Each structure stands twice: as structure tokens, then as C-alpha cells.
Amino acid sequence: MITIFSFILVIGVVVFIHELGHFLAAKSIGVRVEKFYLGFNFFGLGWKINYKGTEYGIGLFPLGGFVKVAGIIDESMETNFSGAPDEFRSKNTLGKIWIMSAGVIMNFLLAIFIISHLTYHNGINDPDPNAVIGQIIPDYPAESLGLKEGDQILSINGIQIDSWEDMTREIHSKPDELINLSWKHEEDIMTGLVKTVIAEQQLPWNKGIKQGMIGIAPVLKHRDATIIESFSNGCLQTYYWLEITFRSLMALITGDVSIKDLAGPIMIAKMAGETASSGGILALLGLMAFISVNLGLINILPIPGLDGGHVLIALIEGAIQRDLPIKIKLGIQQTGLLLILILFITIMVNDIHRLLQ
Image (cartoon, rainbow, N blue to C red):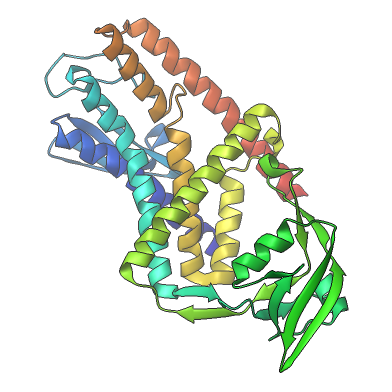
């Protein structure tokens, strides 16, 4: 039950915010919204009400949602357009791009809001500014050298260390090298030689990059975060996850990441359940922010069937100063939906295979 509830909560909020972006953007420039659904109502299964010309509903298949804007060829493949001024196709290029990109913008804003809130709620852990050791990792060189918790690193190879960042930079730059450490233990100044071990980066685009490590962690000093710091961290962390997601997609295209590594709804549900069980609602919010960034970036890719595909068509039509023929748009949409269906089936097979393992 925890897994099901957590999955519905995470996906429901992320999808609702995304579709709300399209809805509000369309309304803001006078485009009629025919349907607003959370979940898919395949075979008419779900609940719906009509209010002021828009059909609002909840579908029984909680794997997404949709907003049907009048005058656009979308998943429904409808082409009965009247050319009325409240239709999507009657708007200029900027208006079309605004409607189709608003969902993505809302996803990024949701991530920023969540991470900002978590930062403000949890506070910030700053490493001790004086390079004081807070933890010795077992079976690493620092332990064999005799370093202890509370010791302060003073110099490396004669270079004075003024901060934890200084020390980290020096050690990382010397993989598998002998370094001369000077440190303060209680009131005594100690020196010794130690050989760093190699820590290879695990991210596909950083493979081959080697860093030195001796197995120490800093003393972390907890403090409250200001609103400005929280918002700044929200923006920085959202950008970080955006970069990670983009680099992962590029690694998939170049072959550095296998398509077998992709995860879908089943694994998201599993992650949501495990996150909620181990970390509670705050941890689940963090997962929600991560998924929101992923959904936003994937949707803005210039692929037929996605928001980015509609943006690309709007740009092409704006450049040639006329609408593309409906047959071409239908063909583009059908091709995109076929590709998305194949990808969805592949991801579901991956998920099932992981569960069986």
C-alpha cells in the first residue's frame, strides 16, 4: 500500500503540475481547453465533470495525464478545426511555443520549490572551514597512517591547507601517489607519508577520470538556511539534476549507457515505496523533485509526440510563414507515438526483468 500510494502521489503531483502549466498558458492567451485529465481514461474508465466548456477528469490509469487544447493535432489525432480565434492554430509562433513549453517550465519550478523548501526545513551542513577530520573510513590509507577524528590537516607536500576544499583539491589531483601529510593531533604536530588510492568516476561521461583518495570525511556543522540561500540551492540543485539527466540522455545516444539501464513506472513505484518507507515524506519530496526535472527535460526534446516536437513544428511553421499540411502533421504525430510506444514497452520489459532478478 505504501508503494502504491507513494507512486500515485509522486507521479500525480508531477503530472498535474505539468498539465496545469499547459492549461494556464492556453487560458492566458485565449485558447480553448477542451479536456484536462489526470491519468488516462482508456475505454472511458474514470470520472469526469464539465465546467465552463472544459471536461475535467481523473482516469483510472495513473501513468500520466493530458490537456487537450482546441486546434492542435495531438494524441487524439482529431483534425476537425474551425479556424476560430480561440484555437491553437490561430495563434502566432510565440503563443504556440508558450503553450507547449509551459508544462516543462512548471516542472522545473516545482523542483526548485521543493528543493528550496527542503533546504529551508533541513538547514545546511557546512564542512568545518579548518580541514578538521570528522570521520575515518575503515581500510583506507588514512586509517593505516594513524589519522584520528578531530585531527586537523595542516599541509600536503609542503602546501599550506586553509580549508577542506583546499585539501580535497590537493588529494584528488594525486591519484595513486605518495604524499607528505602534516596534521595536528591534539597539541602535537604530526607528519607522515601516505599513498593515495584511486577513485574512478562512475558516471559514464566521467569514466576514465581518476582522483586520489585517502578515506576521510569532514566535520559537518549544521546551521539554519536563509530564504535566499534556500532558493539559491533550489536553483543550483535543479540545474545539477537537469545537467545529469541531459548528460545521461547523451550517453544513451552515444552508446555509453545501455537502453537496458532505463527505468520506467514499475521501478519508479518501487523507488517511491522504498524512499517513503526509509526516509518519510521529506525524502519522497526529494524524489518528486528529481522526477519532475526528468519529466520536464524529456518532454522538451524535439521528438514527435512530445511537447518539444510541437515546439519544433511551431518554429518550422513560423519560419515558412504557413501551416504544414495536416497529412504531414498526422504522419509526424503517428511516427512519434509509435516510437514512444516502442520505448515504453522496452522500459516496461526492463522493469519486469529487474523485478524478476
